[in-house]
Amino acid sequence: MRIALAQIAPSLGNVPANFDLHLQEIDRARRAQADLVIFPELSLTGYLLKDLVETVALEPDKDRYFREFKSLSREIGLVLGFVEEKERGLFFNSAALLAGGEILSIHRKVFLPTYGMFEEGKFFAVGRNFRVVPTPWGKAGLMICREFLSHGAHYLLLAQGAELVLAVSAAPGRGLSEAEDFATGRMWEVMAEAMSYFSGSFIAYCNRAGYEDGIAFGGGSFIFNPLGQRLVKAKPAERDFIVQDIDPREIRRARAAMPFLRDDRPEIILHALQRVVESHED
Amino acid sequence: MKINCVFVERILCGFIREELAKAGFSRGILGLSGGIDSAVCAALAARALGPENVLGLILPYRDTFPQDIADAQDLARLLGIRTRMINIAPMVDAYFAAEPANERNLMGNKMARERMSILYDQSARDKALILGTSNKTELLIGYGTIHGDTACAVNPLGDLYKTQVRRMAAHLGIPAAIQSKVPTAGLWPGQTDEGEIGISYEELDAILFELVDRRLRAEDVIGLGHSREKVEGIMRLIRGSEFKRRMPPIAKLSARTIGLDFLYPYDWDK
Image (tube, rainbow over all chains, first blue to last red; front, side, top):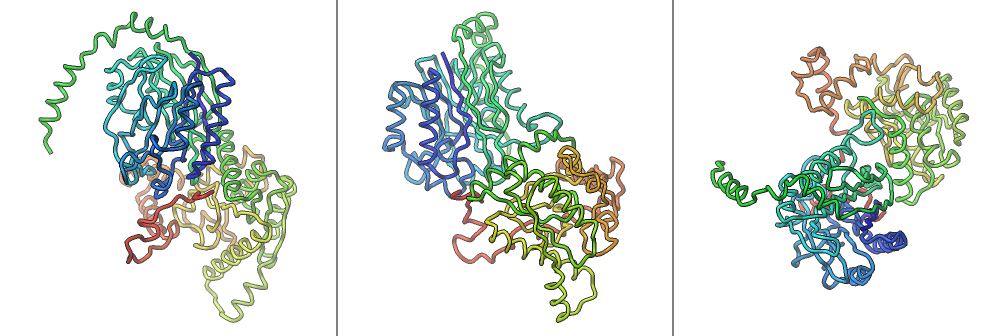
């Protein structure tokens, strides 16, 4: 299987321009004979939308851009980010996975960062689930940016047997050091290394580039294999496009050698969590 | 406090190029004082936009600091950027002839705003956006004139401490005469930043870094070996200058008030 990561810089609030950018990158991925191309979080709209959220919201079932994406997905799988108006007046930071002419999954962001420079909780409704769905390449689960840094979110995908974790991101670069990257760049890879190894699954993470209101997005998109090895990494904080072959047989090899998934006990975790939640005192 | 100058240069050049392009501009303009901050900003802009797309305004008052003019001109020649020199004495003197003042702060602030006024006028004539040159140190302690030297369209240097700007100056090959100059706002002869603030930039930046970037409490910063007087003095300066870093509050009356619940990105429709 061949995966393309389109580390683009969408235009803020300009859906038609971003749609054209998606078409260009999809074409590029097809020419590279990729089976799947992944775009960043909110790739159709840009990130720092604030009150623009309602003006760029889409309903995938009725939307003309999605009609086009569905049609393109007969040739190549797509993961992209957009603002979804799921119910009238309820706006979600969503990611869609399309293949074979259909929308296979829509994930609505559950963890909306709202602190410091982040204001997502002011503008978006909260998603409620992490799902794993069958795809032509194996069982896949979607994640959006901050969720990737949550043990719990990874666990929910692991417990459903995800073989492919597809993460979209609009992560700003923050913090300077002597390294030729933002200090936050490493945080994403630390999580990816641990989670790919301990779940025996592939992880593909696509971040964005470009600037919005002075913020430089950190780029550095990557793919890890089920042995916790990084296969490829895009440039930090600039536009990039990378293509990587992955071998799904590595999932079997990793899980046979290290049976973390086999030995997991979700029912025990569930009961223990239930007790934690019930005994919680305010 | 350590930085990778190659990386910072790349991020800041990208910022200058993309922010200007989004606003529909290919040219930048800035005031060249002959000091290190405007020199670093000019060098970054020349690399980001091409030297022919950068205009440096040299805005002296009479001939108070001839060495600064010469240094600014040398820098512009080295970078290959365009310059224009406009002496602000006729405007400033005319005003103070009508409204006499002998407080040097009044004179200094008026001069800073006169330069701002000329920068905005010249930016419109040159179809250029104004690049700010205020660094993080002076923004945090409020060592600048509101609507004067802090006024700009975009500021590439506002998240670099003064000592980090110095490292960038060395990396960018800024002439030694500028790098080794004692920092001054140039508002009156003999003025120096460190003399006026009462602390060296090294120590000031070290304290600010602990208080702001690392979020240490004042007591913990004092525990690192800095004097209570300095740490508390700096905290007073930070608190007292928040108004210089913000848009003024609007009296809220309606359901949707600018800045409170009418919230759009700066890069709206760009």
